[in-house]
Image (cartoon, rainbow, N blue to C red; front, top):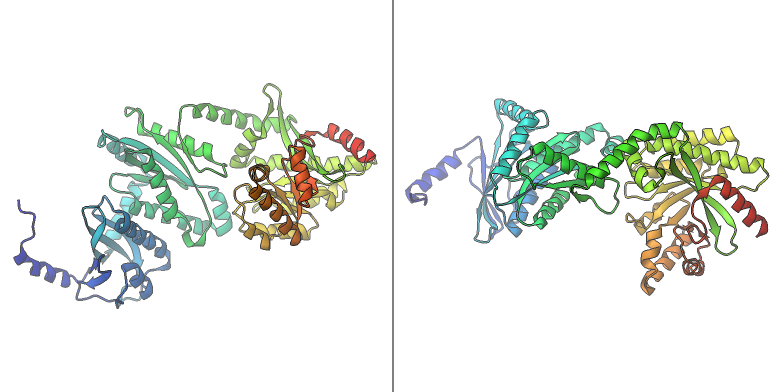
Length: 558
């Protein structure tokens, strides 16, 4: 059969398009960078250098709530122009105010492509058609049956993706918005819902017909994709991050768990569970946000479940203890403060590392109960030193950003200060540095106004930005151990540390160096003008009684 369109029918086709008053047709020549209206009812003015995106945004016809998804649509087409595409069309739904109408209407925006031999898009036929009321109802019904409301429908599509790609590997990619609860608390539940809708609608653009996707629950999404090289998975994830980030100026990060199908006979739910497990285990990692499933993760899951089963009883049975790590003056050798740290002394398992239980507690919310316990222990300790006639030193306690916006930390601190009748200056507050500072700066400012000294913990841990310092509300920077280790190895690195300390002090910030492990590091810090340090070179975290003995011994002699 001759696939060439008969020339004698070309004019008829043009007439049909021109007389289609329900649909707006536009042709785009990529090479000429030119939009050509095909409809007689074409309602827009086209500038010489307009593309679809600039023309529609300039015309103001795209409703604000649809701008982000429209930009994803256009970005996806631009990628096909630059890098090529394996599909011949793309569509999405956007709310538009078409000329002659006073209201926005949901419209179907469709792009048909012609591609060169290299797969790059060379020509585009756009059409824009408003939905009829009946079609909107059908659209909502389809969405209902292809979402988390009907998982069996999605499971069937996943099985089809596996069966229809016998010569390719299959990956289940599950992802969520990290700390989505904070998104709702910071921007409001309505904005959180808008973000989830944006992600879901964007996936309809980004994913091909061979990549079934679904919003599973709340903020959890999943994509099933065939691939030949593992790099293709990373490319897809990086594409998702690029296109889905920054909705309406919001700050958030995605966490990805990936399960590669190694047994095609397993139920698709099992592959999804494996991807979910990887996703849960990567949470809390500041440096990485992608984890591939392997069988050893089941052991990690059992360990996590064991911790969660024991944590409430552990608090009631006093298995948690406050350890104190002294802070020293490098020049005098005196103890000038301490940091309160939690230790879990399990009756059967012995001491459980904080690295094992703190991330789990932060994820499930138990961190607030543990922190409240440590705060009270620190205040008790200060009161004890005063009552014994031992000159106290300030003790700093940690505050997690997991609850800082929702729990009245200032009120609780004031209550403890009053209960134990201790000077506010003796209780210092540490908050870990992150990019997620929305709303936190105001809280830090309120804590300072209440008389507390504020310490920015882990400065240089990966979220660092010297730009943060120009408007910071903190009083003290605690230089992270990894920052010290990484930059001490070269002359250039040592210069960076030196100038960071000098610049911070110039703008009125005090410095404490964490993780000091050698005399060389201590001497170098002293030369740079930093006189406060804590780390194993001076002392590991120690029990309260041992700290009291060390404080008396060192400070009474010095």
